[in-house]
Each structure stands twice: as structure tokens, then as C-alpha cells.
Amino acid sequence: MSDQPDNQFNDDKKISTLYRAGSTAQPPKHIDQAIRAEARRSVSSTPPRVRSPWAVPVSMAAVLALSVSLISLIHEEAPTVSDIRSDVPVIHTEEREITEYATKEKSAARQETSSDRLSVTEITDMAQPDIDTEQKAERQKTKVTKPSLQKSQVSAKIKEELTFDAAIETSDEMSQESVRRIIPQPKSPSPASGRAGASIEFSTGLKKDLGTKASENCEQLSHSACLNSEQCSLVVNEIINDSKTLVCRRSMSHCDTGFIQRSDTKESCESRQGCMYISDPCFCPPDVLCICNGGQPPQCQPRKNGTPLQSE
Amino acid sequence: MIQAVYHFHRRYSIGKYVIHDNNDENLMLKFSRDGDVSAFDMLYERHKVPLFRYILKQTRHHHAITEELFQEVWSNLIRAREQYQPSARFSTYLFQIARNRMIDHARRVSARPVSDPETNHEDIANAGNDDPSLHAHTADCIEQLQTHVSRLPHEQHETFILKHEGEHTLGHIAEITGVTLETAKSRLRYAMKKLRELMPEECL
View 1 (cartoon, rainbow over the protein chains, first blue to last red):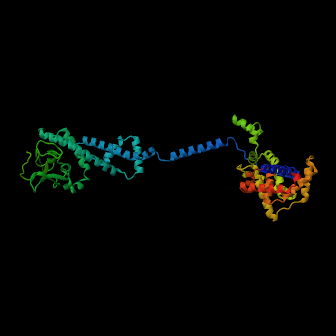
View 2 (view 1 turned 45 degrees about the horizontal axis):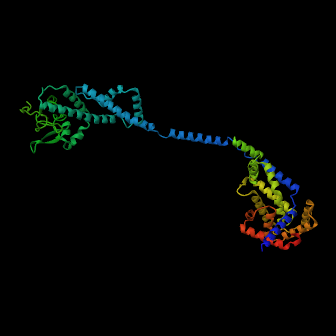
């Protein structure tokens, strides 16, 4: 049995050898030449793609350069923080101007003791020379770029700010007043009161536009605000007739209109024709700590015939 | 530096890189990418005889058709050189082209090529002239074998020729003919069995 595969193997080997021995055919020479010639023609007709050794580095460098330039271009065109801030100074400048105007106005008001009121235009004109050239240029730019922010708006801002300042100063003044009440002092107006008066005078000038609004809402004002108002007066409730029960009502005469109860003095009241100053030494404003408390706030009322001055 | 030495070896085929550099696939790549005609010449020298004989046997020794098909196969290879991908052995690729060309040809003529007895005798006579050691007996055996081989069924015939002319392994034969390894093995086994049976004992 084992001989059979060996015989088969030997027979197969002999067949293969015999077959190869009989295979002597070769392609003719002219076919060889034709095929080789065709190969040469095909190569010569299409030039080989020669890859430069620098092709890859050069292409990489080009891509890199393109990327860098693109990124830098994007960075240039994108709004940066400084670009965003370039808009801010427009507002910033306005605010700074407003602050400067306010400072100038306050200082001017403090120097001015007369009742002449400065218009916003005058204030602006006064403030102008103090603004440096750069700010002027910015302001010009602001005027051009933001026409909506004109003098009227600036003046409104000034008014708001000065009203607030005046209230603070008046509060300071009232504190001094209460101290004077606790410790009796001579009647002559102190420099501080003069200063406050000027400030209030200036403030009242600016508060002219706000007067109507204040008069409409007298009853809604707090006692402290009422004392600072020109159009409103804090008075004793006549119905209850209790000195501790005060109401804020609209000023009813030329004497109490424009008279600020918290800060105006007797002289400022009685300088008005036919007006008399009435005050209660124990009246204490709501935001001031006093020893005694009660009585009505200072009043500037029309003098009635035969009415004696209470303060006297 | 190492790269330069390697390039030198590649270019001039020196040292251990000769074997690797001059394999069929690299030669074909050199020809297709670099237009290296000498690489094509080397390939042609290696494969022209097996391919010619394979076609010749498949056409049953019809020389005119064999020459025509043989030239067509190489022309196809030259034209499609840019598309060559060394994913398979070059010889497999080449014999696949040849096989496809023969199938196309068979479809064209709508008949299987018939063997040419005159050509057969010529081949055998040539074989005898090439090798003087072959005796008349051997020449007779060769003639008988050629006749038996040509009478094999087509699939067995093809497998036998690919095995003995192209020196292909059974795996490559299966790849060229598009069948499984087992089928190729089976075809060859049947072919050999039939030839053993047909061949006279004095020839074996």
C-alpha cells in the first residue's frame, strides 16, 4: 500500500519532466522586439513623474505660511478688546466730561454768591478751556458719531448729579444747623451756610425743570425730600393739628415757593417782599439726631398785617 | 547617509538588496512609476516563455493566435502600467490578464481553439533538436503526453499548464483561475491521474 503513493509521486514527477522537456516553444523575435518597442514608446510619450526631493518640504512650508497668514489676517479683522474699548471711551469721555463739568460748576457755584444762575451753555463754555486737546478731539468725535448725546443730555446728567450733591451738602448743612440748635450760635451766616446757600442757589437754578415734577408729587415725597424741595413745603397737619404729624404739600405762595426749608435762612426768606420766617427751635429733620424733637419745620410765609414774627 | 547607501543599492542592485529590489513587483513599479524600460525588459525576459507556452497550450498550439494573444497581453500591461498596484504577485497579475484575453478571444470566435497537429509535431521536433540526449523513444513519449494533455478537460488542462509552465503554486493557480484552493488541487489531481492512466508504462 505504501508503494502506491510513491509510485504515483514518481509517475507525476516523470510526467512533469517529460512535459517540460517537450515545451521548448518561445515567442518569436519579432514579437519580442515589437513588445519592447511598445514599452519604450509608452515611456517616452508620457514623461515620468519626477518628484523633486524638495517638493514635500516646499509644500509643507507653503501650507504653513498660508496658515500663519490666514490666522494673522483673522486676528487683524476680529474685534479685539482694545477695539471694543474704542467704543467705550465715547461714553467714558462723556462721563468724564460730565464729571468735569460738574466739578467746574460746583466750584463756580461756590464762588458765585449772587443769585445769577448759570445756564448749561455757559457752564459748558466755562468747562471747555479746561479740557485738553485730546479730550476735545474725542468730544468732537463723539459729537460727530453720537449726535444724540448733545448738550441737553449732558445738562440733564449734570442736573441729576448736582441735585444729589446738593442734597448731600444740604444734609451736611443740616447737621451743622442741628448742632447750632443744640449749641446756640450767633445769627450771622457762617461761611459754610453761605457756601451751602450758594450751592443750593445753584442747585435750585438747575432744579427749575424738575420743579413741576416735584410739585405734582409733594404728597409722595418723604419728609427729608420735602424739606429739600422748592415746590413743596413740610407743614403741620392742620386737620389733626399735631406738631408731630407733618404733611408735605405744594408751596402755595411766593414766599414758600423756592424756599428750601432745610437750608434756607431767615435772611433769604425775609429778603422776599412781604415774607416772614417762622421756625421752631425743637424741630428736628428726620435724618438728624437732635436732643429735642417736635415742632414745625422752618416756614417762609406771607406776612399778615399785625402778625408778629414768631422768631422774634 | 543610510538612505543614500540604500538608494545606491537600489539603483545598482548590489548586495543583499538585489533580491528585494529586483523582485517582479519592484521592477513593475520602476517601470510604471519611473518609466524604467530596463525594468520592463527584465520582467519580460523572466515571464515571456512561461506566458507564451501557457497561451500556446491553451490555444492548443495555435501559433498565430498565440502570438496575437501574447502581444495583446503585454500591450495591456504596458498601457495599464499606471494602474498597477503591487497587491498580488506580478506573475499572478500577468497570467490573469492573459487568461482574460483568452476568454475574450474564445468569446469572439465562439469556439474553443483547436489544436494544430502540425504545430505540435514541430514543437516536439524542435524539442528533440534542442536536447540531443533525447532519444526517439523520449520524443515519442513527449508527443503522446502532449496529445493527452491537450485532450484533458479544459479546467484540468488549464490547471496542469499553469502548474507546469508557469511554475505557479496551487494557491496562485486558484487565484488566477478564480476558484478555491481545493478546487484547483482537485483539478490537478484528476489531470495527473488521467495522464498516468493514459501514458504507456515505458514512458513513465
